[in-house]
Length: 145
Length: 109
Length: 135
Image (cartoon, rainbow over the protein chains, first blue to last red):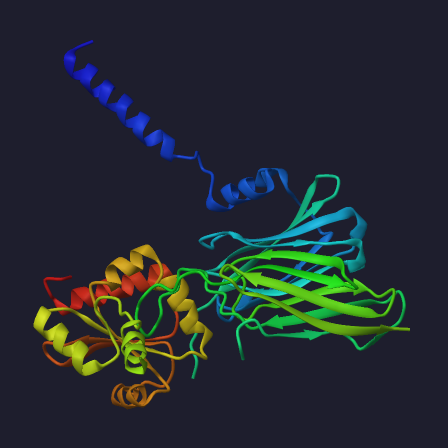
């Protein structure tokens, strides 16, 4: 191998060593946050029609987006509800720990959204599994008169 | 309204076995820590509720962890299966020294 | 003792560099230092202003470009705010008026919230329009 080729190859090797640690091989902020807080990867959580997430398709302002989550899964089987907004600086929004006294799975609140994004409602069941509902919410430009 | 004040709405009367809605609104700026103050341009430090616990007759009904992702003056709605009359108590705190309690009564027939 | 408290509370209102509440002062500084100007009309009651302040002004990329400007922020409901709103024919909030301080003319007026990306582009474009070295 001539000297030029050797130097070029070494440079590429050094570059890939320095760049590689910063590449999480495609893990987005939402994937990282879910992995961190739930201990499972987003790809392991399945969408389920049993989780009903209500959120506006078009939100007036990202400062105040009303959402509600309901499910017919018996409350005794449910541990907690986790809300995430994919495109927020911190995707995690809130965690609700239910008790059987709640009677049913229901939670309503108002969340902040930085921009148009997926909103996710993830139910952690007592058997350790997860089910989820995802809704895409568009945050539009607006003003006050 | 003062920071930490809250309105708790429960039906005054409920039938035994009925699942009722409990709603609350707490006065709090819920600053995430990234907002720039329009007057000064300075970044406003994080100042938000961190925990909200709801009790019924001193038994834990629901525990909620939260941060700056909830809107200012947070609204929370949950349900409760009414089995007996008693007192709903909400206990909440923020990331500084704020800690508050509010109660409301439910009459179950 | 009371005088001390008054003085201390005055200085507790620390301003970010280049951020003004009085147009006369802001425009003077902009003219002297060759800086582009952005008026920001806002109100506490408007969630779109909160949206901008939290997610757009707070964004790293937007902040960097915005910090090149003299920002003159005016509460739409204040006396000063209402006076300048009338001058620029401002009807709501959030409203942004891009101003050429050197030649005393309005460059552009933008109404309503924007995404971080859009606002960064608007700021860049407005900065370049002034032809100032700063931009």
